[in-house]
Structures are given as structure tokens and as C-alpha cells.
Length: 196
Image (cartoon, rainbow, N blue to C red):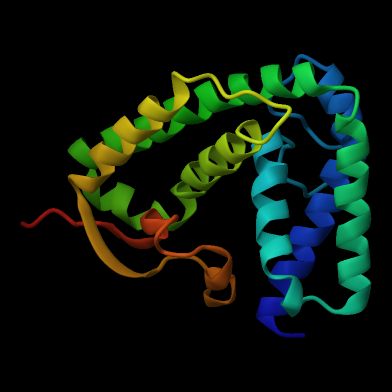
């Protein structure tokens, strides 16, 4: 099996598990939910949404069985949200603030330990992708995005641009078509290493 297919299958398995536990997650006060199945990342709305975006964008790379499984997981997620508009908004805003702090801390690291921060950029930038996924969800009716959020994200983007160098896509090549450069510029390049 190709590495590309393995990555997509892994994303799909995680998405299915997240959709299955979303009802309990939304009714809880936990932000980073430990999923019942072992070996899974912690469940958050942003973690679910970033995977859903990627899988739906790369639908042509999935076989029919995987497409059916994806559609079932997305339907399950949508059904959970039907009665939980306010709860989703609340939980998404709590996660947005947490992710803004997390991304801000990473960007601070660029100022004092740039070599380590540069080396970990490919993994760290998932936080920025989660921010985008959450903002996009909250900008879709019937949800409402707190107007204070976009300026906070823009400020962090400005901070990143101070250290930015355009370059190749930082995630697996097969994901690139899910992330057009105009909307996801921060996936095309990375922080400039400090000169010695």
C-alpha cells in the first residue's frame, strides 16, 4: 500500500472515531478529549474539521469504500450538530483562544530558539490549519464568529511573515491540492533559519 493511501486511510479512521465521539465531546467541558480507541490523537472540533476539509478536498484520491465511509462520518457529525449550534460555537471559541495562544507561543520561539522552531515547523503549522478550519466553520450560518478573532489571527500572521521565506509545500505532496497557496500561504515555505 502506498504511503499516500496510508495517510488518507489514517485520516479517515481518525475522522470516523472523532465523529463517533462528537456527541459526548460536545456535551462535556473537556477541550482536549481522550478518545476511547487507543493510538488516536485527542479529539477537538478543530482536529475533526481540519481532517474533514482535507478528506473532502481529496475525494478523488479515495476509493468508493473510503468515500462512503467519509460521507457516513460527515453525516454523523452533521446530525450531532443539529441540536447543538450554541454548544458548538462555545466550544469552538474556547478552542480558538487556546490555539491562538499555542500558535503565539510557537511564534515566540522563533525569536529566541529559531533553529528548533524551524525544524518543527511542519508539525507546528497544524495549529494554524486548525485555526483556519475553526474560523471557516464559525463563518458558516447558523454559526457566528466572534469579531475579535480575525484580528488576532492576522496579528499572528504578521508576526510569522517577519520570519517568512516562501518555499515548497511543507506537508505530504498528495495533500497539496487541498491547500491552495492563496489561502494557505503559510504551508508553502517556512521560517528563515537564523544566520550564524
